[in-house]
Length: 308
Image (cartoon, rainbow, N blue to C red; front, side):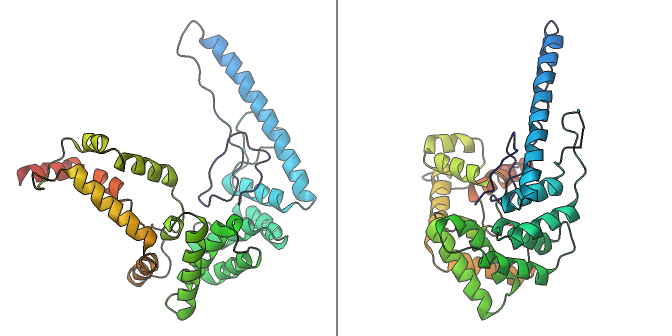
């Protein structure tokens, strides 16, 4: 579920996917040609100023809607304060924003949540869950996560935000039978409506995750290209098995197991919680292909392998 991005010029992605970020000014760059640099700079400056005026107008309209009680606009205003994207009043300088003000953002989220808007409650839950803006307070986080459940249902449109709330409640209450129930409900909901267990295996969506998974699948379906990427890597595999063939089989098998096993995703999270504690900001899932290219392809590793 995404708030309407009523005053965005360009879209910036919040890690939760379901909250619209504030409009972001796109700086212009001057032409590299000395003969036309002055003219190009003037044109780009005018365009930038026009975008800034449009952004300020849209911001004022969003504030007005927020004042009138629109919960989506209230969250948009809060997120603008949260991310430091509130245009300074009467400023004529493109990109001149007020400093971020998380306390002010929280007040906006609270009002929006009381008006029944679940993304606002989810943002509040995350503020206290991760402890990055305010001191971590899992009791407060739990209260706002329960508010998310009150304002959502098990329909496709609510699957992501409700599923993540269920998952985080399961993590906070681990180990307990109630925790297992929350985790199971979360996995079932997201598997039913979000094409498998990926959303469940990751506590939040790293930037570029879905694009990466798409590129990975394309690469796995193209052995010649995969082999080209692995060209030059030292290998101790049998001459009958190339690194590309082995990696392709290994990654596909693990991906299939992650998506189809009814217990594997929950077990991964429970074992991680037993090992690292109640709340972790890391990823429970593993991007196998990227890990191999990053680790196996590192110059130091390659140098060591070359001496074996």
